[in-house]
Picture (cartoon, rainbow, N blue to C red):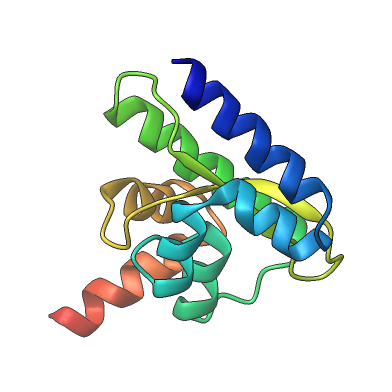
Length: 127
């Protein structure tokens, strides 16, 4: 236990002496690597892939709908979080990430009024 606490403290101390980008990437660790590899997605990245042109305020509401669907499916547990740079302001924010085929993403698309048309378009293409 002591070595783990010491290693964590040393990691944080080392991260504080580096650049801001490296610091937040180090704090996110393996999760940031999975996001970069595409094995985990942020809700904003999903909207970009689907071609949804929503302003930031509406994107955050979509994220709230997805988080609510994820909590309902996983007995109140939150999804994994990662530090990421905001796409317009450049500030570092803590956001949830999901597997690309997570049912919560599709439930969020269907429950949020501004993205509901994207779900209907996906089913129309499949039919």
